[in-house]
Amino acid sequence: MAKKFRYRDQEFSIEKDKSGDWVNPETDGPSVSITRTPGGSLRAKSDHADLPAYAIASADQVWVHVKGRAYVLEPVQKSRRRGKAPGGGLTAPMPGQVMRHLVNVGDKVEEGEALLVIEAMKMQLEIKAPHSGTLTRFLAEPGETVPAGTALAEVAPE
Image (cartoon, rainbow, N blue to C red; front, side, top):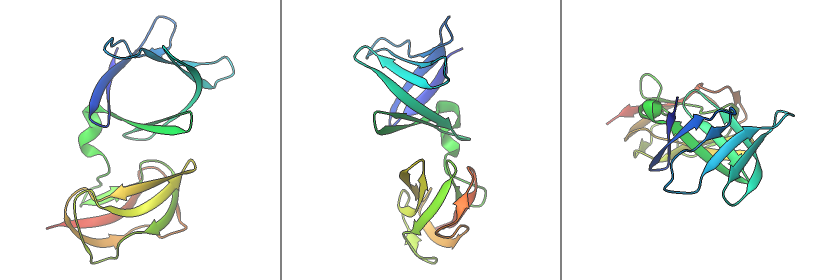
């Protein structure tokens, strides 16, 4: 069964082939497959390269790391819920440590404005406002380690 994902503004499908590898069956670009080696690690293979890969899945995203670059894939059927918690809050996309707040409680924020930074897997990730409004509170402080799905902040709509 094929699964649909979105990377940036592009949607694509991946599916398991007969050997159990995940492949991109679409032919309008280079073919890509993700295979698991006998030792348990992953390899990303394309028409041009065969590279080590690392992947981790959270509740609503898949992070794939290949050759020093991170690609965030969102399942198409779940993309509307990304980063939002009940009541206008925001959640950690993966386990990490809160590094710093970028705005203050009470500040007016715009949709997409970065509110705080968490570090996960040696990457710094900006957590952004899901809509315009007022930042009402932070639920995690700098230095705090949070699991995936933890509410981090709340933004009251305008």
